[in-house]
Amino acid sequence: MKIARLRSFGWLKLLWRGDRGSALVETALTVPVVFAMLLGAVEMGDFAFRASEMSNAARAAAQYGAMNGGGFTDCKGVFVGGNCDPTSGMYAAAKKDAPRTFATCTNFTVNATSSCTCSGGAACAAGTPYTCASGNGLPVVNVTVNTSAQCSPVTSVPNLFSGAFSLKGYAQQQVLN
Image (cartoon, rainbow, N blue to C red; front, side):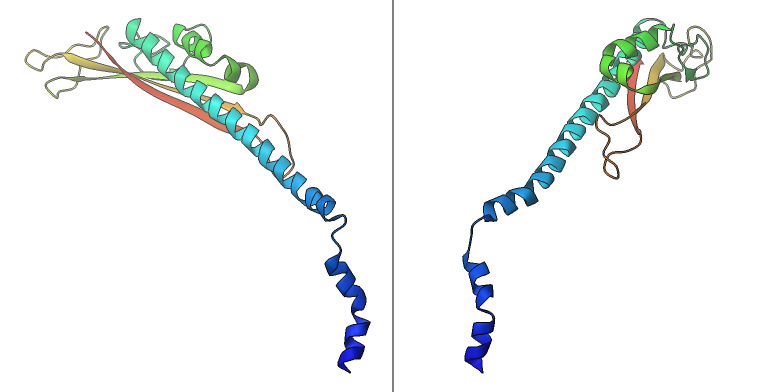
């Protein structure tokens, strides 16, 4: 009985011993995995670059605002925060520091606000410039800028890379008196 079983499965032994074509099968199984990993690495690198640009754009806009009167008003010239329009200097500074993101993404926005506290701890009085009541110290003004954009992946692979991603940047700059 044992001998008959071995003889009936003798063709199976031949499959286990033969290695012709195994390299082709291994290559066919690994190439798609390596290709997907390569696509993922390219996408991650691209989004890391764009995220860095968004942070740099926020920093540039905050520096522009701190140096050019933005510490006393936001990008629209008022005290309440709001989105900067494309003609403002803060928007232009942000756009200049994120050229690839601005060119390839949609809904690129720059939002700027300013806040003030007196060095003595009291609230500042609104005005251009901010002022502190006597005995409360000097105004400490901060410009805060948030940038955002909707970016799509470079490659569009169904169920892997699809839809837009939101990238955001944040910076806060203290205005020197």
